[in-house]
Length: 49
Image 1 (cartoon, one colour):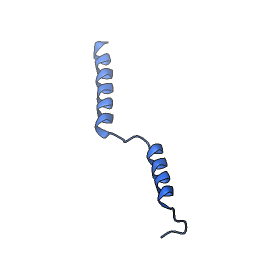
Image 2: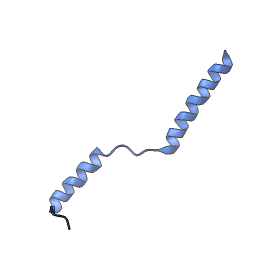
Image 3: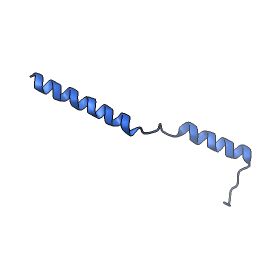
């Protein structure tokens, strides 16, 4: 084990901290859908001119 070992209470606190502060899950499908809709809107504006 490491030099600094945590008891169960300390491990739970560390786990809770990292769960709270981790960034939101990156959703690739959602990101692609946003890009696609933005592209289609831009293309539609160009054809309307």
